[in-house]
Length: 297
Image 1: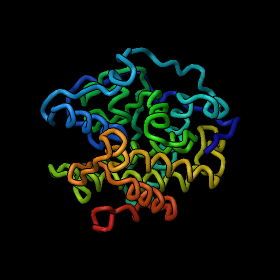
Image 2: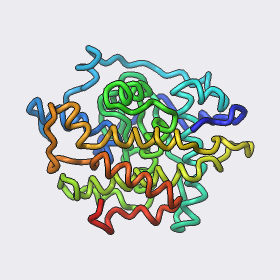
Image 3: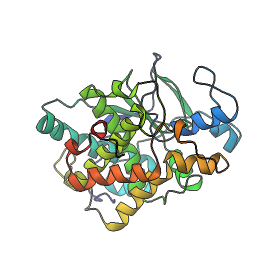
Image 4: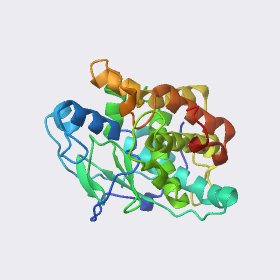
């Protein structure tokens, strides 16, 4: 989905800093699955140290600051991944600040996105390219290393289109909406598998990303300019390619030598992730996203 070139980007909604407290990463976003799988293959456990996939892929993780000063307009968002993150954050938050009170009588609170290079500290521990984007409820921030989008395409097979990237950001803000609604705790049932609470939380976030996508072309910047152009069929195909790329079964078969173990699933299958994004997109209403009300995931 392309941005309108003359729209203004609000960089105050993002930062390059990290948090200080410790807590649990909820949602694990898109790349948390990778850490789980590598840990299982190399003998790690939930209480032990994790293996940094970025170290495996690139030979080491280097920390660095991310410059957002070049991100001023929609044209910048169309050409640059960092600026696209900022524009998407602006759009997602503009949508939910009106939709949440209207739909469920809850006030929306902005969440800052931390855009970093290599790694940074969050209130939920170290954020790195290997963990992928995630939402940390302890500080109510979204953490994204923009280089993850390259891995999403080159390692996991997403098509690299704009909405594939924007879907990732919208998914993490879906977790923030869940946090504000008091739903996140339902995912902490200590179980894994295709019907676990964690999978239901992730699929709901996919659905909420679809809800935003339905309304994205009506979101506006601070001056009232529309941020995004209307969706095309190619945009939807791009988002679905990202959803499929981060399905548990696809990641297991890609990184796990072809072995798929449903009982270890934490995010849902590719088909389920595509299904729930589509459900949200077609309805445009968060009330269709109750993944806890059905076993047909």
